[in-house]
Image 1: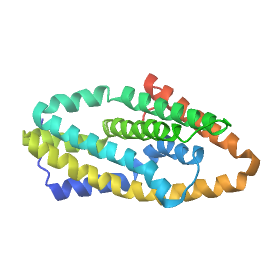
Image 2: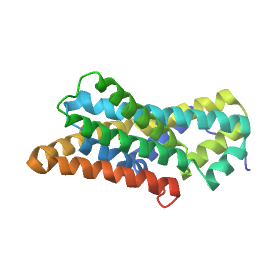
Image 3: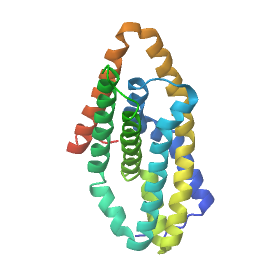
Image 4: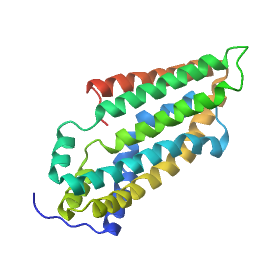
Length: 221
């Protein structure tokens, strides 16, 4: 392993560059369907969907940097070989089931508001774990981050690099999904009329397939 140094500002720029390009493409099939399968409630509702996912990614990158600082290139080699696709697949499957449950409960005449916090918890937790799994999937920028953290040989330095990289990586996708994708989904749902339930179930079904495909290794983010 060749020594590689990376400052916090450079890690942030590396993460921002990744977040401005490939990251949006990778996240779209996993996070996008959530906006088409749930009721639109403006920017506030969109933030409730994006925030757990983005926080999960930030925590994931921070943990990856910390572990690389402790374990060295062992973590980088492990992620390059397998990643944590099983975690991302499981979380995506979890989110899909939460969406199906929410749709089913919404059509029950006896549905009560007591169920709402549980549904929000299930979806929010699933989105957080989905972001966490997304952060641990190998890519060139993440490999550079792990190499720099491993070279530093310090858990604290690795944690700082991971946080800086994660902060840069989540800024732009968070804005794009909470404003752009959420608005597009809201407009599409508003114009589909009686076909809207079909759109919602199809979106949840797509997430279900993404979860199974990712778990089995057929789909790689």
